[in-house]
Amino acid sequence: MTKPLRVGIAGLGTVGASVIRLLDRQAKELASRTGRDIAVTGVCARDRSRERGVDFGGARWFDDPLDLARSADIDVFVELIGGAEGIARAAVEAALAAGKPVVTANKALLAAHGMALAAMAEERKVALAFEASVAGGIPVVKTLREGLAGNQIVRVYGILNGTCNYILSRMELEEMSFDACLADAQKLGYAEADPTFDIGGFDTAHKLAILATLAFGAAVDPGAIHVEGIQSITLDDLKAADELGYRIKLLGVAQRTALGIEQRVHPTMVPKSSAIARVMGVTNAVAIDADAVKELTLVGPGAGGEATASAVVADIADIARGVRSAPFGLPVASLDQSPRLPMQRHEGGYFIRLSVQDRPGAFAAIAQRMAERNISLESIMQRHAPRPAGAAAPGAPVPVMLITYATTETTIREALEAVVRDGFIAGAPQVIRIERE
Image 1 (tube, one colour):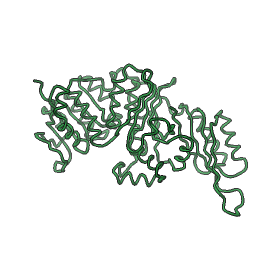
Image 2: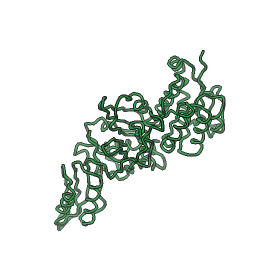
Image 3: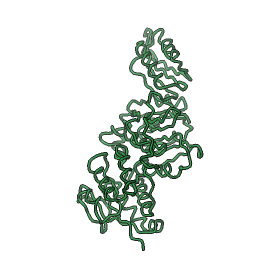
Image 4: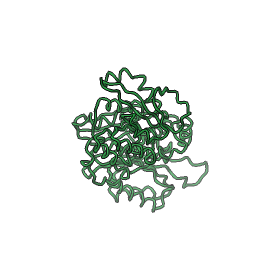
């Protein structure tokens, strides 16, 4: 009879405890599907006395994750500690060095050190599995690495951070300010006390770096990703998007172009008719454009103990079956190391919101600056603020919204710099890119 697969879990927070519960609940089904029992034989966490609501059974407690990673009592090491450096990295490296397969949900670690860790796993012929690192319970890693192996992927993009999607959804549906929505998200546990990693777009960038590698066979390179967060999005932007037939989402986009591979994270206007636009709340979604399947959209819970544990257990089950793939779909030596396309080369449509001084010649000057750079405008929206009774012209600045046809990032920035120098607008221009279907 095949020996049980002995699992060691480092990190017993919400996800770690959920993995133990799921393995226990599905023990019979997993044994039938994999051909062997799966048993948790080692665990490790910072606080041994904390009540976690799970039965560790006969699992041995380790105070040091490195001791667990190297232990002869386990066959596979599950890292749920988090963080790109420190003990999480050291423990994963120790497990791989000892010839043990590793399962991790740590997108920061993979974004920073994925290539080196994958090379270690390849050298020792063990698995490095990370389904849970991107989009929680959505099986996007296996979809890109195995399910779409017969496709050439053109674009992968999506909503990869539930906190940002929750905030933008509440702002739009309830007409709440960004600050009020963020405070509510923090009360509900959707956002951290310091939310910068989420709302600044950095969490999405780490996940996008992994998806881009899987989709295009390009080495993980988070430093090449253009990153913007949602802090500047206002109710005026959301209302204008609604009137124009769009919805604003924070998207991570990786795209193959004739000039190279783009990787970008930023607030984006998407058509209301698109599948991505209909994803609200803390839900995640990943859309894949490929030559054979055309467009595939995966939607599901992007975080939470049960959803993330589902992905972790799926990886453990693969290891129990003896399934092992190159971590990023190709051997590390075969991954494309060429530089990514800079954001300045991006080409697409743009939404621009300006606060224009109500003075003669202002609109003509703005139109001239756009025309000088061959920027064609698809639509213009202008809202006149009501003037107080008896007030003399000119009045307060007028909100003006422009939608452009396809142009480049560099061209838009140059035109707006000229508009600012002319002195006809108040404050900084708001620029939101448009992602067409």
